Image (cartoon, rainbow, N blue to C red; front, top):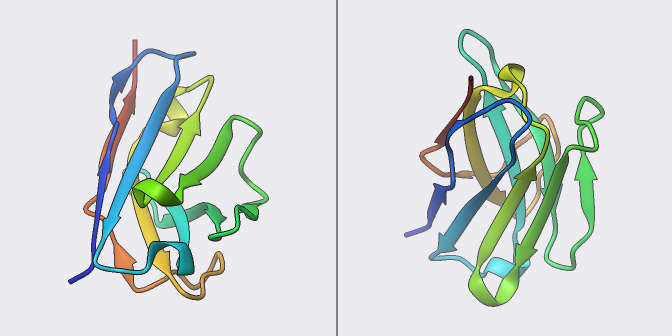
Length: 120
């Protein structure tokens, strides 16, 4: 059974940083593309970034340089670093995995989400 478990969310002040983690199990991690999405209150879930097993990355056109996706295949873990957080970044952040992912077509595996709240 495939499981993706996110962590690292929380309450952070504007201007702060967070690193979200997604630990995967039950799949051949290096063979899978890993991606991050987020869903703000009252809005649709949107694609942020993805990374393949070889480290090739692709970001949504809407994503600023404040976001950095990475992975550690030895730990079956994907990461999303977010810097200079603003209240507009408040959302539930989801990890996604699959053999074929593009921005509009996520993979079949989802984590439970981790809440990020940016507020002073």
